[in-house]
Length: 71
Image (cartoon, rainbow, N blue to C red; front, side, top):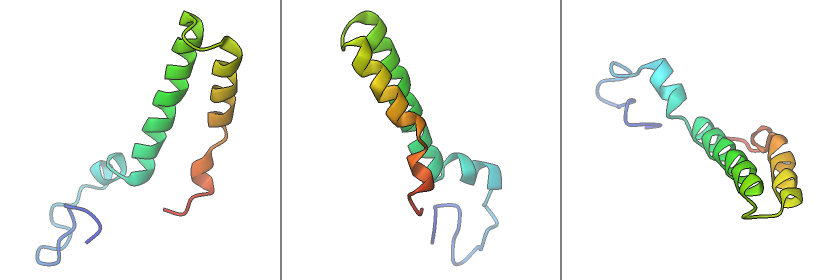
């Protein structure tokens, strides 16, 4: 079973392809990466972290590391 929507007994009767994509591991990781980029941006603007570090974090996260991860 790959998700709660795929079941041995009822097959993919409850499977919604759009919902499956939204709840996928890759989508979740993309959301975390986007959050971290925005967090670094705000923290840099507010002076919580040095602006240079904020920009460095954002640039590092621009590289889509998910392409390297086989999910």
